[in-house]
Image (cartoon, rainbow, N blue to C red; front, side):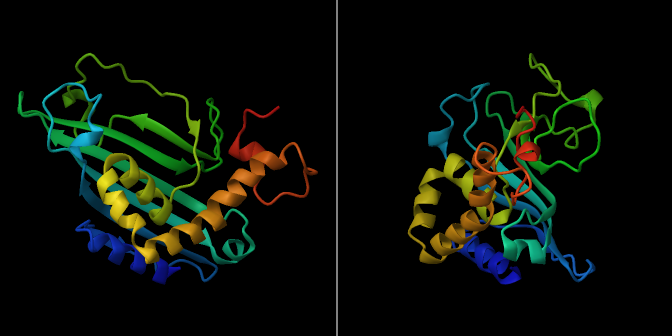
Amino acid sequence: MKKDIVDFLNILSRLSISYKTIDYKENLPEHLWGYSIKEIKFSIEKSTLKHIRPLGFSNLEILIDIDVVSQNAEWEKLNDPFEVLSFRTLLKGTNKITDKTHYLSFHVDRHNGGKTNEIHPLYHIQYLQNSKVKPKDEFDHGESLQLDLPRMMQMPMELILGVSVIISNFAPELYEKLLNDRQFINLTKEYQERIWRPYINSLESYWLTPLNNRIWDPRLNCPYLI
């Protein structure tokens, strides 16, 4: 799996997509494996900015941070392998009209199982302004309204699947180049087979198989199921 990560980062580097740091978490117990990557960075293509507000942006970039801890044995069995999965995306750019820097962020997380008032699908996506950029009392919210939006179900996204999804949406010309890379195709197919296929099958299995005969728990993936 470490080789997969190295190979994928090399694929990105061939397209001038950089990252700041990577930590392979060598101190984890033997049955676990993981990594943290900081600031995978690339520019957003202008063709994807059709509905942007306010107007005045032409130089937006994306920064992605990823934190993963997985169980080796569960990976081989096609069970849910993740103990930690955090995929954080920050969009930022300076407005050429106002000369102000603006931010938008969202993340895909694996819920840690703690009790909360809100329903948490096991893997979910949530949009919010990144308060780490500036202290909350200094952030200019303009006319926006901020509060906890519903956490929507989301297929798990680690490095290979997650970065591919973000590139396909915000840099489609770059994504077309990736689709011509046979190594990228092979890696992506393998990870879709090991992660997305059993995740999606778990939802279908809710109506098809006994409760004790499931690999991924559909009620964790979709807690709205009755």
